[in-house]
Length: 279
Ligand code: 13P
Image 1 (cartoon, rainbow, N blue to C red):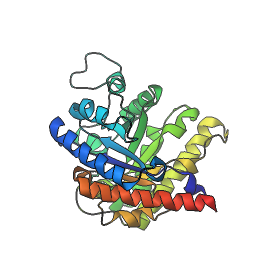
Image 2 (tube, protein in one colour):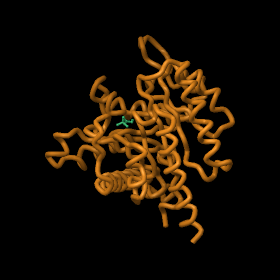
Image 3 (spheres, rainbow, N blue to C red):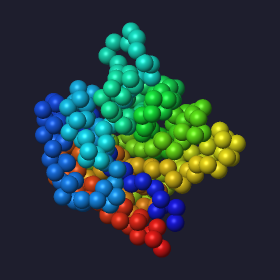
């Protein structure tokens, strides 16, 4: 079964929260919990912490040798220049950042980022060896007007426009319906799974278009995450779904106990995948 090969990912997006001292304390709590979950990293999901830019330099060194990865919440696509307030890929690399969120809905809707700049950011991330997590999701009126699949398909298509076919394997996509973010309303697991399967099909057709169907990458191998009011109490149902390979967690990732329970659910999914692969 194809699902068995996919990486399970649990990422915490801390958004504009935590001073660096608070971020260090939270990181230590999470690391202690992760250590007690399993001595063998093979049994754990890929865990990513995305603190604010100001805490990357503090959190990064704490993660060294733990297997837990460092992510940034955004990035400009240019290397340097007169772009007041922006952060470049070189600056993230300098801090040993592994992942970067691209096109988060708060960036799109509160700060005017477009599909076009999302594509520039994503391509710059790939060019620098940073792993992009492309965030997509519909607004409530788009869902009510049955535009979900069209909006999400467009965001995926635009975000991945003209990327080198060899780099598809470096991309993760997070489906985060805007109406579910920070609202306590989760997208029902089966519906989230359906949208994630639409995303997977879109990725497959984009890859076929760019690669001339070289068959080197299979969209069935791309991790697709769900985000939007994920909590310890609803994660298990989400991770039972065929096309949901993990979570991008906001609010609940600010609480070590809650986030560790989510990581534990991710580890259960890893166990399930390993068992399925053995058959
Ligand atoms: P919440 O988990 O707080 O709804 O946020 C989700 C999110 O935006 C993660 O990127």
